Amino acid sequence: MNFLAHLTLSHFDTDLQTGNFLGDFVKGKAISDLPAGIQRGIAMHRAIDELTDHDPDVRELNALVAERHGRYAGVITDIGFDHFLCQNWAQFGPLEFDAFRVGTYWALHARRGVMSEHIQGYIEGMLKHDWLNLYRTEAGMSHVFQRLRPRLSQPQLLDGVEDLLTDFYPAFNQTFLALFPRLQTLADAYRPEEPSHTA
Image (cartoon, rainbow, N blue to C red; front, side, top):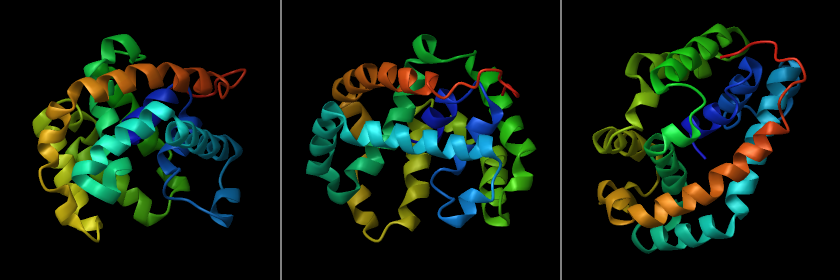
């Protein structure tokens, strides 16, 4: 799962949201230096990824995507699921999308003091370029995928990725609809008894 899904699944607590955002950035000893609630969010992030990576329907979708995009199928699928979360927001969104988006930006910005300067730069980029809003449209998704290219050793494997979500729409949507309720059940296990901060 990508940014939007992780932030949505942890929307009910600011520390958990922060940890879910940091899950791909913070490793090793740096985790133990963070507040306990944020550490729990990182653990939640990894549990979400573990469940997703081992889901048989997701693996089947990844195999389909790999026929076009090879080794980057899993990354593309994770990003694609954020688009399908937006398409199904009326069913799965915890708040009206714009209210969720603004609240999430506020929550992450408020926790920037526990983040390295490098990660703070990601937060600033997210706010400046309104990353979460990009997942709503095909044009926005094209921008997301283009932003991914410089980070890849074989960017040519992304050629034609803009057509993927349309060409494989039923497979993506059906896989997402089957998977996300399971992730919501997982997320419920991480709810604090007394939520300290709501994003």
